[in-house]
Image (tube, rainbow, N blue to C red; front, side, top):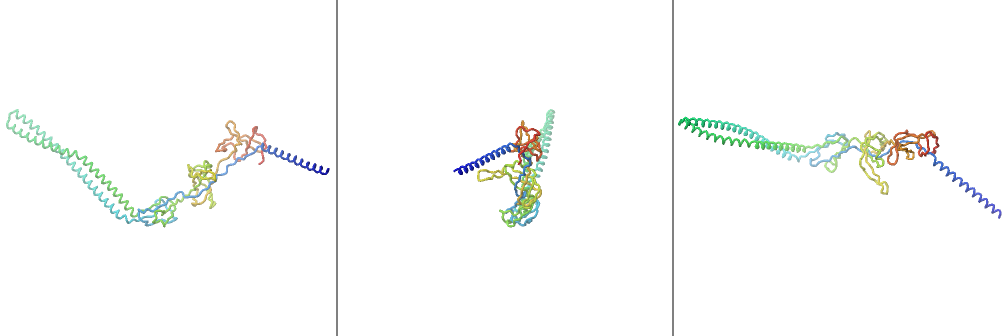
Length: 420
């Protein structure tokens, strides 16, 4: 019985020791955690990692040329696959024997128009000549009328004098003369009226003739253009619109649904996308670094175009969350084989500052810089971007700052910091 009691006491004693030791260990760990929590932590200011985008090399421009059956059959393809061409070079030509009749019709239309123009011009010339003759005749008739009236007045004056002298012979002579001059004046007055009416009608007639000439000239011009176009269809040529490398599809020589010739510009560009979260970091003409994955080649490039509106909206998971993407183009320093996969590196000139590290005093920002166990207060310029702060000026890259400054820190104070 005594032996059992001793055994129990020994067990209870061991248990008590274990419990006390565990309590001491827990208390010590809590004390250390509290001390570490209260200790100052440091943060090294480093430039942000570059933004990496994926893209594909593509030609800057491509033109597909199709045949036009209305121009006839393709007679001769002037280029071959892989050949470099310049804008304006002949790619292929047509031959269209069916346009022979159309050319003859166009020639006849031109001849008719030319005949009509010649007639209109001759009518105009004759009309002007007749008008001038009528004007001359009117002037002569008006002159003769004035002379006849002058003679009539003189005869009437002479008759009055003969009557005053009671000279019967002279009275008879002048009376007869007055009678004849009256007849002459009446006849000339009618001639003047008739000629004046003709002269007055000529402006409208000449205007009509001039319009006829103008219309005939237009008809000749139209007929000439039609003939030239029709003759051009007899052997029409298709020209290259851009400089580039040619790909010929002989199988489409009679197929208007497929391109006969494709022209690929020799210059290449890189097409890529950027998410809405990084879009604001990019700008047109921004320099980038281009890495060609298949050849492991690296070269500089420049962002040449950046979409203003989203290009795609893709689901990021099985939920309703989506990611909005924007398209961009990059011009590499050298041409790259179309189709190659590309990695685009965009350097981000950004130094992120933990929000907790910034000390605000009257809207002015400060950081506590740590060096050799001593802290110093630095006035800095910061800029907020979305939900974080960017260092603009005030401390150098690589500086060590206090991430969790507490109140009561002073300039030149020696402090202990938590070891990472």
